[in-house]
Amino acid sequence: RMSDRSFSRWSRVPAAIGALLSRVDLVMARTGLDAQRFAALGAQRVAVAGNLKYDVAPLPADPRELADLSARIGARPLWAACSTHEGEEAIALAAHVALTSRFPDLLTIIAPRHPGRGPAIAELAQSEGLAVARRAAGETITAATQVYVADTIGELGLIYRLAGLAFVGGSLIARGGQNPVEPARLGCAVLHGPHVTNFTEDYALLDAARGARELADPEALAVALVELIGEPARLRAMGRAAAEAVEKQGGATQRIRAALAPALGRAHARA
Image 1 (cartoon, rainbow, N blue to C red):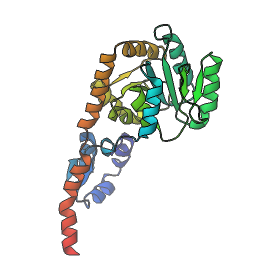
Image 2 (cartoon, rainbow, N blue to C red; image 1 turned 30 degrees about the horizontal axis):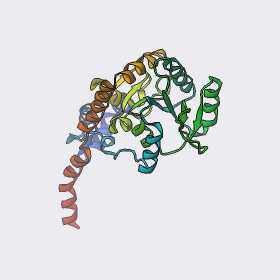
Image 3 (cartoon, rainbow, N blue to C red; image 1 turned 60 degrees about the vertical axis):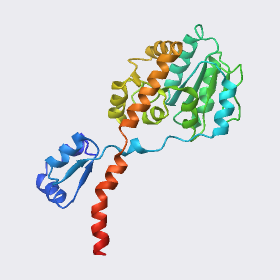
Image 4 (cartoon, one colour; image 1 turned 45 degrees about the horizontal axis):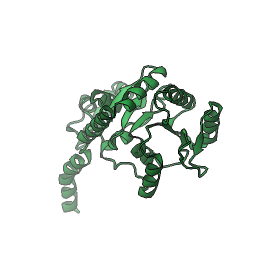
């Protein structure tokens, strides 16, 4: 990767970076733009490999936990607010309250970016008169549960598989967003705010494929949820589009291995 900032800085010392890159046999760049920048700075041979993040295996989930929670939820409508930051849980809860007239048995799952905030989130939900269960406290979902706080570590794969529709946090407040590739790989439709500078290209890809949707403001969350939960076929199509968009970006690992094989062969022969 060659960021805007790095390219600007290296361009000020063309002789130094040119001398360095001239000694590199091959640069495997993340994107076409990265490749152009490396070539402009003096790399003699540049190829586009793609982004390795698209070859990462899907997030895991305990099959027993998945089966248990799926059975407890049943046919209830649900959605998840994942990797949320302070301030976004209040937005998610407001959306839940707004949707209950349309979906009285709605279940909202909140998986905060920092699990230690679970008790505070549960208290916030209770202050809204909502029935809450916390996963870290060993509480499970019942027919009465309205908000499930998934305040554990390493279980986003479980949450994405359960929900199928996720708002990815850090994006309705100015935190730069969180990784949308993880839910998309699992066929989860993605909603996000405008603050996604940490993952600009990934969100642009998913938005263009209609596997994700940008929310202009907090009020737009409830509107999008009503539309997608109310139209299951549309929601499934959005999830498929997200998964297919990510799948098409894969293959960087194989391209890099193929490019390295001749060099490794020559090194082995010399050894």
